[in-house]
Image (cartoon, rainbow, N blue to C red; front, top):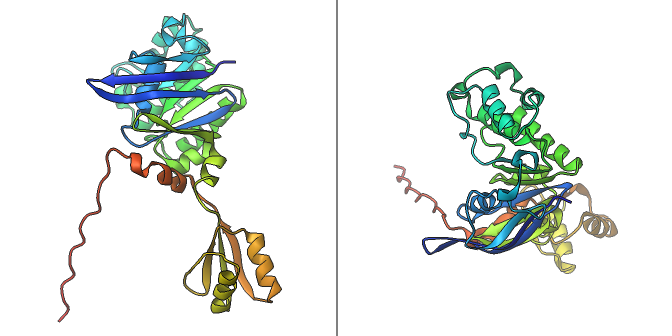
Length: 313
């Protein structure tokens, strides 16, 4: 089994601890979302896993081995950390051919991954003519070149158009279905929720969560039910009598907190309350993430002051 194993990993830069005794494991067969505020240590951790930095203490191993000991690393690990890594004066095809040659990969893989990334028609164009989204696709093609069992992607959706976002989402899912180990760092909560099975969340270099996506959300956001009726006051009294916290909205709409649809439906039916709308409000990853990490944010802005309105004559 090829997993990523991070054990008591610590990295300090000039007295500042970027990664703080971090331990987690990324398993094959699922997409693991790697989350955390800016400065949480995600990029540093990925660099340590890939041998681009040396840890102050602890270890990061891939399939039980340090990256530096891998004989032909592209056959074991594919990674996208920086879409600007390719030399601008090279064509996309030449960039991948050089990578293939350095790891003794068959030349046919270059054309296969260019086609997979949707770059076949521009493969002979110089990289400096590429948009950010095209460079992202090239970086992903490079990560897939060695057909590796482990894939690490840092912000893979950055710069992609809607079609590209759908493509990378499906690609990550397919890699996991094939039994590969997939670790994806992202700041886009809604996008992460669309592809991740599991989450590893950092804050100030420390592990905050290592849990399945659904469990992460359910543990931090109370279920809610949206209900609308022609008898708003009756509904409010009914919820209060049964100890259900609620918030009144407009047009007879209420939000019942910590309740389930079936609970509200039974209560309304018991008193013949006319119900015009009854639906569960799905808790989001963004809500759960903010609930966990608000106190861990290193860089936080403040709202702009509101300008006082001029008095009307």
